[in-house]
Amino acid sequence: PADGAREHLAIVIGAPKPGAPVLTRVHSECFTGDLLGSLRCDCGDQLKGAIAEIAAAGGGILLYLAQEGRSIGLANKLRAYALQQEGLDTVDADCTLGFGADERRYDAAVEMLRHLRIERIQLLTNNPEKVRALQAAGINVVDRLPLYGTLNRHNLPYVQAKVDRAGHWLADMLSGDVRRK
Image 1: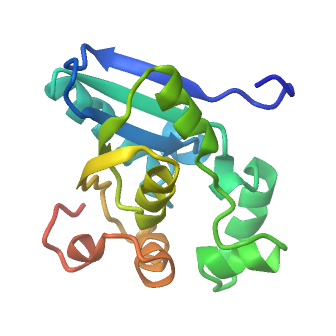
Image 2 (image 1 turned 90 degrees about the horizontal axis):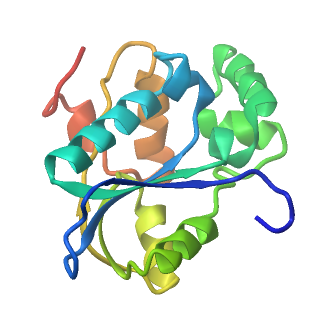
């Protein structure tokens, strides 16, 4: 970015088919899940799963957005973890710290897609807000494909809050209709 802010990444995997909707994952960085393999979230599993699905499809785009902890930053995310240990869910913990339920924005994803001349996508997501934000900005989301991490006793409250508080399409995961560990 021209303002010197953190950089977002657009990673082209394989060879997306010209003229077809591009299989796309818009992924917000998660240091603890993506790099450390934290069991408290499903982020790392979703990232690996998206890369595997894009590769299996022959190509697509991974947009890796620099907005750690729903865009509250790593230090505040760790503070939110402490509040979660005291019984708050992820949304209430973030709000207790003075943030909204989800501070993420998708303007950078839209700009990267436009720069790559991609107007039609198949979006790998469980988040209705991503679909809404991309569509509102003029990106044609022709299909929304689910993307599951592994459910375990450590991330169950996190996933439950995503369903109950943010409306994520993960109820089938919680009901046991998809893989569990």
